Amino acid sequence: MNDLNKQTANLKKTIFKISNNPKKSNTQNQDLSFKTFVQVALQHSIDTLAQRFTHYGLPPSQLRQHIATGKALVGFEGTPDDLKSIDFDAVVDAINQYSSIVKESEPFEDILSLLAQDILLTRGRGKSKGQFMTPPEIAKFTAKLIYTPKEENKTHQFCDPCVGYGALMLAHLWNQHKEDPESLKNIEIVVNDIDPFMCHVTALQILANTTQHNIDVKSFLILCSNAITQYDSGETSFLLNFQTPEIVFARIEEIQTIKLVQELMSEVLDMKPTKNKSKDSETLVGAA
Figure (tube, rainbow, N blue to C red):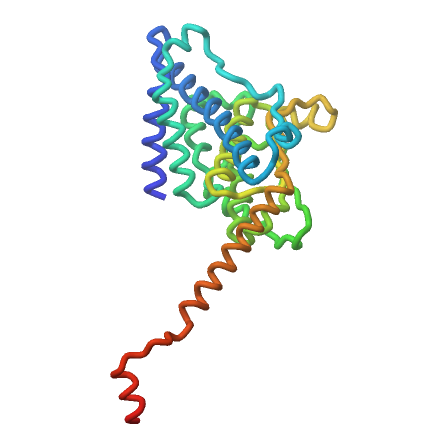
């Protein structure tokens, strides 16, 4: 955990290099830096997911049938003057750094929740919407507490109508992967939050983990709405909706089977006795 804290602290420093508009306060530049990082990193993760699908056999012409983005997905939120002050090398460095942290951590480790809270919700800025984030360790404890084994080859839904930055959902996926990694291919994830940017962070965290750890869930839908007045009314907007194609699951299973056969063949060959014996060995056996 100490290593992860250090890596997250270094990531924060890199992110803060992204925006340096002299007309803005330090806090404003930090906010814009983090939002720019999340928005660009999320688009990068969506592109990586699309590449993963085509790599495993999905025709590019069918991508739109399996990956859809909605009105809640936004691009750069700064002004044209802000854009001139963006350090794009720092954006790339931050995305690469984040991807490395995700890849080196356990699958579905929560990297961004506390970082986002530290940057965006300090000095009571989250009180108006009741935004108080669940610490990752408490989220993991909760996930372990309510875990129940999933029936094999049956679809299950993981839902969170007030997902925030994704701490609780990530904890459930983290625990499910530990208990039964094969079951993730049958998991449908449905999450929602009233705050569009929180939806972006959650989408990034889940997508980054699936792509960096080569893990496929059955589907992932992230909505942006008021859970009390809009969630069931059909007035919701969505940020991202993807469904893993069957051809991807089939191709991965085929590759895993081929690897297993190759490993078994290798073990058989290693166990096969050598035909050529040394003269010393033959003499020794004959003498016995």
